[in-house]
Length: 140
Image (cartoon, rainbow, N blue to C red; front, top):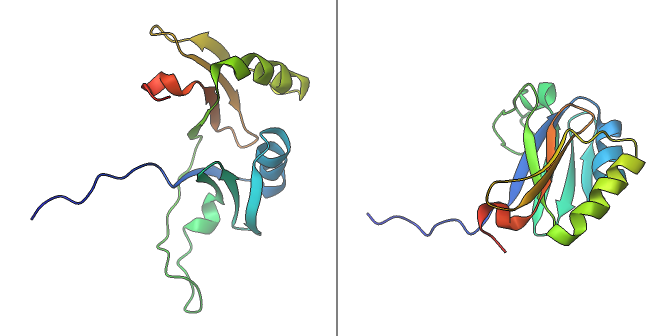
């Protein structure tokens, strides 16, 4: 049997949170993502270019679906995770100033040894949120 085609990208990525209001304030209000759907107390989903950021309350995602719900298997994580947003290098100074203006502490702002720059902050749940140039991974 031959291997199927290699995936062409990441369709969705998840972070696990503990407060949907604070999560919406950060990802929609600060980062600027559009809310796709919100279902209290379980999740809120955001559009980010051609991908989706899923923000789940971990305790809610470990509950098996009921008979009348979609058959998504239980899943979830605990503790801080990580997500990285692709930002053109020329926009990173503006992002750094904007985040500070919004009262968000920058944990780290540096250039990698091969040149690309990354800015790290924390979301309200403690997840590491990175804003980085796509060339970090050799992408344009």
